[in-house]
Image (cartoon, rainbow, N blue to C red; front, side, top):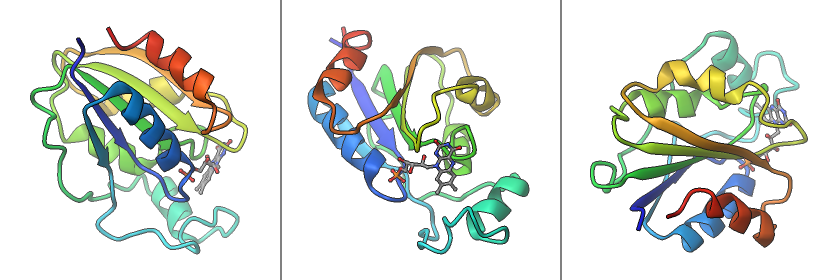
Length: 159
Ligand SMILES: Cc1cc2nc3c(=O)[nH]c(=O)nc-3n(C[C@H](O)[C@H](O)[C@H](O)COP(=O)(O)O)c2cc1C
């Protein structure tokens, strides 16, 4: 049986709802990746050229995060969830991935979006993941409440 850890970042709650559903089905620890400085609604207004999210994106900023999952060392499979930001994973996910050696882990990504598919998300995230890991899945969920889609995603992951 896989030993699973689910980690996620969510600014507006959609990815959080999906992560809770996925983690309840997969078992194991559920860990929220939180920024040291929480995002306000104004911070994530990408329509404002000088909002925090745009500054972080343009400045390729590292985002300090709070705490670490308790079961990172002992798990073999890590499910990593996030909203698609600018056709990829948010900077905070890059910052989170950079903190660990992923040797021996199976990594599966899941995301919500406003319509974008997974696109080049995997390739853009790889430079931030070190070690001898296997990236086994990456899926954007159109509807975070879709039970069948969550089951189908996990069927290919949990052994
Ligand atoms: C800064 C920012 C950038 C975004 N970029 C994209 C994008 O490139 N493509 C897309 O389909 N949706 C984009 N979105 C929409 C989010 O991916 C979508 O609303 C997501 O479900 C939000 O998840 P959350 O509620 O967990 O934060 C963006 C949202 C924000 C705040």
